[in-house]
Length: 452
Ligand code: GTP
Ligand code: MG
Image 1 (cartoon, rainbow, N blue to C red):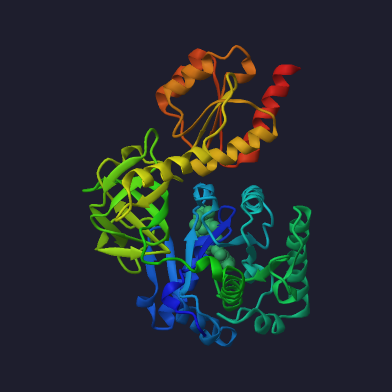
Image 2 (tube, rainbow, N blue to C red):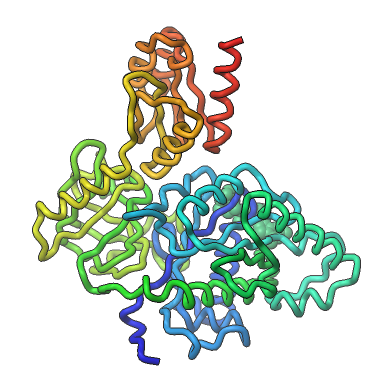
């Protein structure tokens, strides 16, 4: 093989799905299997992500993955916790993730956030597979810890197999209703054209070898060229979250998808107003094997390379926005980098009208998705911003002449208590939801109510 693996970046895998369908459990299982293999140290915890190197993938996948067949360094999995909008996972020109795993509970089937995830995967044209999770809950299931799906399937009774088949075909049918031609993964010849469904259990590890094999195969075959980047150039990334951190003030959790970021680097970050130019004080990583999102004690690192999740501590980050671009300046011209960040922000900016509803969302990506959905529903927007519903939003909404527009639509945001109060006195109606299409539906019903 002619490829130098150090010049290929790790593919970014987003793990999506409805609340409680088992996204985190699946990643925990992969981490746990590495611990059992005696290789716990090899898996690095990132901010909001888990990096699994190729040799670990191969030891978990057993016979299914021969490391000699691959030259990608491994996979970086990004967990998207329930209620946290995975629409944040955007990057220059589209999806941040190279590939995705859509987790669907075999008993619960398709749910609102499953449909929302599919919609986003469709729009961003992200290749994905479906993990049909919790197969161990099929009544009568006889578990075979960590076994490939074929082995464990063969060892089940006819009745159990039939029940699992029914659930799997229902998922395949649901995918087809949404316009995706899908099949059980071992029947899929061309993963670019068809969606592969992999039965798994995050609890028993059954099917996990298959899942990892399919993911490696997908990224190796279809993504390799995109993975060839200048791994040592100035870093490019996306803000996942803006967070207050004891001793550091406001910090940003970022996913770096290109190049490197180092301590003392000058960076440009997309802000509520102007791009923020600041200097990296510290790069923080969770301590090994600690829980990703609950971890409060960090380890300082001097430098990280793509793909990675990392917390960046720097002054002046108060105005940074989730979903906004981050760029390292290093030996480049500062003004040029600022322009790039501005251009990228402008490309996500929402077209507003003179009259319309007020829209608030948790991230730039979700704001963009909301704007798209409202555009389709022919609902004009007067103001669109990232952030919680605040009193000044009420002021804007209350000036609308049409009662249909004295409305605020909030996606994945809170309503500040003084805003709630103002809304009552000013006759402004606030809708909030964690699923975009439901939010639009609620608004439609409201409008119908007024028009009757
Ligand atoms: P959010 O982050 O809240 O969106 O949920 P999630 O998708 O990360 O789900 P999580 O991994 O937290 O799992 C939800 C519940 O389902 C937990 O109680 C898990 O133990 C359980 N669970 C997850 N996977 C499996 C599985 O394969 N089998 C069984 N029996 N239970 C599972
Ligand atoms: Mg979770």
